[in-house]
Length: 275
Image (cartoon, rainbow, N blue to C red; front, side):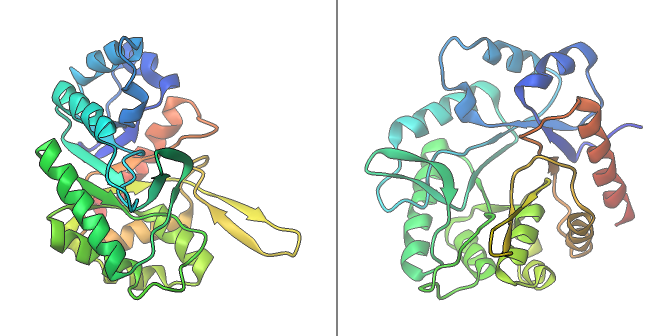
């Protein structure tokens, strides 16, 4: 069964040779640009061969657009070098911060939803888009805490961010579900408050649950399992609301055989065909 060109898979190192040897019927691939910043990396040559047959998306994890300090220009330059080399059809980053005083933290940390944070994030998106010479997409986070100083909901912040900068959204359906369970949000209400015209890409992934000694628990965005039924249902809602954008299957830990990812991609195509 061929896969719709709107469905892609996050390409990880264990599958490079499989893709080169088998040319699977998938629409596109997405990679993290930071994995290719090292000059002379043989993975770059393999990625070039893959890009001869498949469209590519670059999904950044290190620009730290939410930091109060300015963007790391060296990081931005390396990002641009890869864009010029691979001509990706989508470029994206996260609604988060991970850098302070030149030091990087090993996580994508949430930002408060305030006017001040909106101004900082918007300025950094403007700077990045101007330097890169193209539109970028911003991914909604999975979060495990909320700031009491926030004055906007997450959908309100995302809508305002796109309106100020001209950026689009990378709507991660699993992240919506994870954050909604963790904070007691209504995920359907969240979706209905996102403007469909702003959605330029969708991510689907699996998560896990962490239970603590006091009996409380959190959902963790681990990308280590199949997309669960409730996330598939939320994806169907998004499609019915008109958010029919290129959709990616992410699987970053406990990575299975490539055919397992193809199975998830086929399920996404089935949902698309219903709308």
